[in-house]
Structures are given as structure tokens and as C-alpha cells.
Amino acid sequence: MARTSGPAGVTRRHGWLSPAGALVLPLAAWELMSRAVLNPALVPPPSVVAQTAYGMLQNGELFVHIAISLRRIFLGFLLGWASGMVLGAVAARSALVWDALRPLLAVCSAVPPIALIPLVMVWFGIDEPARLFLIVYLAAVLMVPSTMSGVRNIAPIRIRAAESLGARRADIYLRIMLPDAFPFILTGLRITLGFCFMVVVAAEMIGANSGIGYLIMQSRYYAVTTKMFVGILVLGVMGVGFDALFRRLVAVALPRFAVEKRTG
Amino acid sequence: MATALSPSGSPEAVLAPARAAARRGLPAGPARQAASAAVLVLLWQGLSDWVFTPSVLPSPVTVAARAWDLTLSGALPRHMATTLGRVLVGYVTGAVLGAAFGLVIGCLPRVEGLLNPSLGFVRSIPPIAFVPVSIILFGIGEASKYTIVGYLVFIVLALSAAAGVREVPRIRIRAAQALGAPGPTVLVKVILPSAFPFILNGLRVALNLAFMAVVSAELIGARAGLGHLIMDSQTMLETDKMLVGILCLGILGGVLDRGADLVVRRGLARFTHTAA
Image (cartoon, rainbow over all chains, first blue to last red; front, side, top):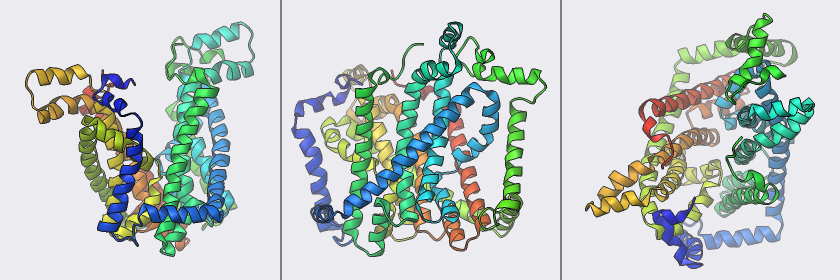
């Protein structure tokens, strides 16, 4: 949205000062709060957290956990996304598949995925398959509805035109439906990635022996609050990073889909 | 394939094959969904009877019996009430404070410019990561649960209310000012209603997240609530009790979501279209 129309249009005039202040002021407030108001042993000031983070970067501890968490998120996400998209596309075109899928989907989308972590641990233990199953499941459940609404939104005349020109079914799926439903799929993708991130961290906190979530939980048991805050900050950087990366990818690789609504 | 094509992009396009199926004598729509649900439950029963042990997958009959027992003993209603109470207290507190905060910083562009990046950063941290922190600060009791839920709702509402203020047509504010309205009046009578669609949207998103946050908090450290029930059953390997907890969470979440939908559609319909 154009900011010029709103009252916030003023922020532009600050130039570089505003971003610098936005970084420095909250950190200063946190430092002050931690040293003056709260107990620094419980909520360590950012200067101490930064020191700890630097040490953990140097001995490689942080990279190991980050890499493990990232691999879990993306592997599960890709598998679940692909299967959810196929299921959604088929369900949007076939009422039989949709009717068969609907009761299961209704239950799955009502139950918060984090609540399934203990059950998945009973099934798979705390090894890698547990997380993989959870993330694939979650990504699939989230992708089915967004793919369906994308496919349902396709102007039927496009499919008819392709059919009358002799397109095969595979052509219709790949060349008409996929690009046409893509804006919806992208929106679903972004939401799904966010949820996968959330659930991976939860799964690592509740039952795992590596990853950023595990780092936070382990630091809690050993009462090393600085490491806990390093973990939390890393999660924030990862979350912001995902979002920025996603936007960048869409803008660079798929500029025609960056616009949300297109006419049929 | 051609049967799936109807003139509009409406659900009609999807329902056409169902009608074709009905002509062939197959049950369609709700009947077929009921059949699918029944098949699912039978499959579950079969799997638990012949493939898995009860501690891995208890049968639906066992789970239902356990749910009945837990209801009669009063444990299940108590846990449900605890979870619901935490969601509601945290949600209402966080929503009121967050919306007020968002409206105010939305009106102060300089302050908003300073705070928005940190709010966005904190928002992108999965709420469950803050659970250990809130337990350290506020103990294992209710306060830490209210804080987790309230904090998350606060951030979502602050961001959406501030975004709503940004989209208020400037001419409305100017008109009110030209007619001599003082600052607080403009905020309450012009900016709040104009920004309300955004706040409403934030409220819907926050409800789901609040539910998720309370479950996270209860799984990691609590002495009551459905999340605690689930975690407790895992330690004791009482998978039937765990499934009761999970299904109850699903029901509670579904009811909250539908309820919110209903309230929005019945009572707040004038705010649902985006600000113009």
C-alpha cells in the first residue's frame, strides 16, 4: 500500500536515522530493563547475549543446530507441500476424492499440530522420522485447501479452450491449472512455511536431541539463560530471513505472480 | 472430465461430477462424506485390532470409553475449562491492550517507525520458544500461561491495528479536525471505526494463534489443561487418554473458530469488507 496517503507518510523523511533508531532503541531499552528492573541472571542483557552468541558461532555450536533445524524444515516442507498440492488439485477436480478426503481433513485441520507431537513421539520415538512425519503431515494438510481454492478459481473457459484445442489431461494440469492457481498456492506456501517453522521448533523442544528448539530447552534445564536467549534470537532471525527470502524469490523468479489478483 | 466444467468458477464446477455420480446411483455429497468418515473409523478399528498394539493405536471404542470415564470423573471437563479459561483471559487482555497500543502508535508515525521492526522481529519467533522464559519469570502457574497467550495476541493486534490506522483515509481525519474534534475524539470516533476491519482480521488470526500458544505452554510446563493431559498420558504411555485430549482440543478449537465466524458474520458484517 502507498504510505503517502496515510498519517505514517511522515516516516520517510527520517532517512537512515529511523532504521538505526529502530535497531538501537529497543536494544538499549532491553539492556536497561535487564540490568535495572529485572534480574540479569533470569533475563540477560543483550550485550551478554551477543557475547555468548559470538562464542557459540566461533566454536560452531550454533551452526550445527541451525543447519539441523533448517534441514528438518525444508525436507518435510518440500515433501508435504508437493503431496498436498497434488491432493488439492485432484480434490478440486473430482468430487469423489473431495468427499473421501473431507472428514479426515476436517479433523486434521481442527487439531492443533503441536498437540500431535507427543503422539508422534509414541509412534516414532525422538528420532528424525518423527519430525519428518509431523512436518510432511502439517504441510500437506495446509496445502490442500489453498491449492483447492486456487484451482476452483480458474476460469473454466481456459480449460475448455485448451481441451477444444486438443490438450491432454497432463497438459491441462501443468500448463493451465498450475500457473493459474499459482498465486493461491504461493500464499498457502508462505503460511505453510511459517507453521512448519513453528512446529519444528516445538517438536525440537518437546522431544529431540538437536536443533534450535533443543538448544533452548537444554539451556533451560541447565539454567543457562543466555544460551536460551541466543536460541530465541536465532529463531527470530530465521523467521525474518525466511520471509525475506520468500518475497525475494517470488519477486525475482516469478514476477508475474507477485501481483495477487489477476483477471481471468 | 468435461462434466467438471460449469460456466462460473464457483463450487458448481466441483459439484458437477457429484451430480454425474448421483445419476449413476452412487451416493453424493454429504452421504458420501459420511460414508468416508465411517470407513475411516472402521479402518482405525481394524488397524488397532490387527496391526498395532493398543499402546500405539488404541481402538476408537477404547478411546470413546476412556472419554466417557474421564468425563464422569470430572477430569476432562476440568482440563477443558482450564485450557479455555487460559485462552480467554490471555486473548481478551492481549487483544484490548494490543489494539489500544496499535492505534496509538499508528497515530504517532515516528514511534511506529521505531517500534515496527522489533515488533515484526518478535512476531516471527515461534511463541513456544518463549514458554521457558515465561516460566522462569512468572512460574509454572496461570500467570505464565496468560502471559504467553496475551503476549502473542498483543503483538498480532498491535501490528494489525497500526496497519489499520495507516489505511484510514486522511480526509476523514481532516474533516473531523476541521469540525473541531479534539484528538481523543478523532481517535475513538474516526480512526477506530475506520481501522476496525484490520483489527477484526487481526482478532481472527490471533484466536487461532492463542489456541496454539496455550497448547504449547501446557505441553512444556503445566499442572492442568488439555496440553498437560496429553503430555501426562505420554509419560504414562496411556495413548487412549492422549487421543481423548487431542480430539478434545480439536473440538474446542473448532467450536471457538466457528463461534468467532458466526459472531463476525452476524454482528460485525459492516466491518468485514476492507477499508475504502
